[in-house]
Amino acid sequence: MKRAIKIILGVAVVFVLFIVTVCSVVVTGMSSQVKAFDTTPVDVSKVADGVYEGHSETDLVKVGVRVTVAEGKIADIEILKHECGKGKPAEDMLPDMIKENSVEVDAISEATFSSAVIKDAIRKALRNGERYYSMIDLTDKCGENEDMTLYELFEEWLDSALCQDVQDDVIAFNFNLYEDAGSKWSIEIVGTLSFDENDEDWACDEVTDFNTRENPLQWQEDTSWEDVLSKAEDMIIKYLETGKYAYKLKHADAVACGFVDGSLEIVYKR
Image 1 (cartoon, rainbow, N blue to C red):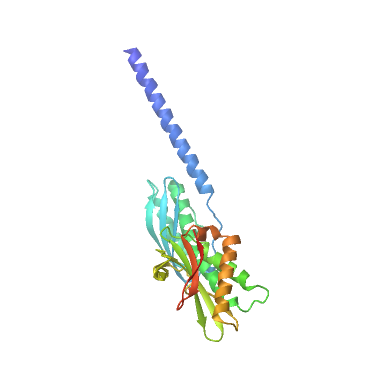
Image 2: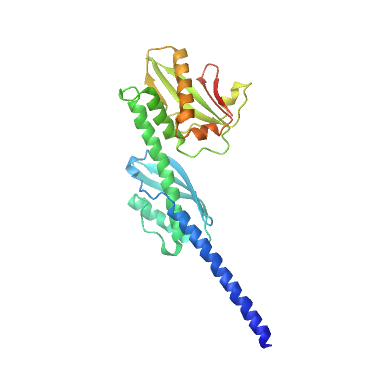
């Protein structure tokens, strides 16, 4: 009998030690993931008015949010997804964020991990708006900043567009060119759901324009459309070779460019 009790106690001790070890490993892993978050505060006053989504996750906590910004202030925060175990109380931070117009409010002590992941998702959402604001500024200075070459403007503009996450269903990219009044030209980038080298209608199968339809790169130049198309091709090829986010473009099946009322030129095909 005593022997049986000892065996049971031994098994119980091993089981408890196993559970403690597993929990310790999980907590350590979660702590490392949270420490890797970019906790740089976001200046909401520099975020353009609009509705932005952000997502963040660790091994045990997954969060999706939708943030509304109006007149430089956080107007609303909606939780789209919060897989959190017992971390639900972390959502109590949201009214304080709206009141303080800041993500940097006190975390909920009984839900520290969920608090951190929610904050990260909201920061990411706001940074999407911050990028949108940066592209507006860049558009305003296009054609006015003589210290920057057209390619440097193109590179900065494209970095602003591609620094956001590219949707998994984007199969190809197309750079749309426009001829505006007064010798002005503009370019936007779209991601598409399909690619067919024999049917140019694939470029109309758009899934995202990376906010560039409202914020295209614009410049003024007294030249022909053929010259603009050639320059656009050269800039795209150069970016594919040296650009910060060239790997995102190269991950697609193809990259093309062309005027919206003309034919497409394939500049890259995987």
